[in-house]
Length: 67
View 1 (cartoon, rainbow, N blue to C red):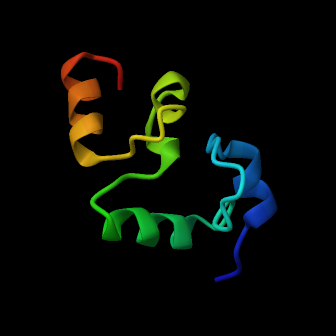
View 2: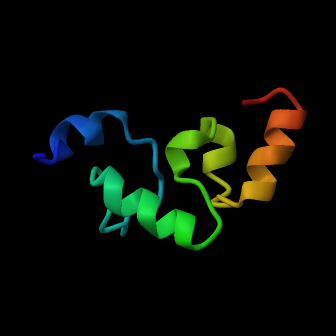
C-alpha cells in the first residue's frame, strides 16, 4: 500500500511542528499507541493544542461530551 502523505497532511490537525510523522498516519499511530496515547487527530482543536494525547485526557473529553 502506498502512503498518501500529501492527502493525509490536508487533514492533519497536529500543531507539533517539528513532528517527523506528520502525514504518515501509520507511524504516528504506532508511536502514540506505544506511549498509551492517541494521535492529535482524535482530539478537537482546543484539546489537541494542549499536547496531552493521553488515553485519560481523551476519556475525560468523552465524559464531558466534547468528543
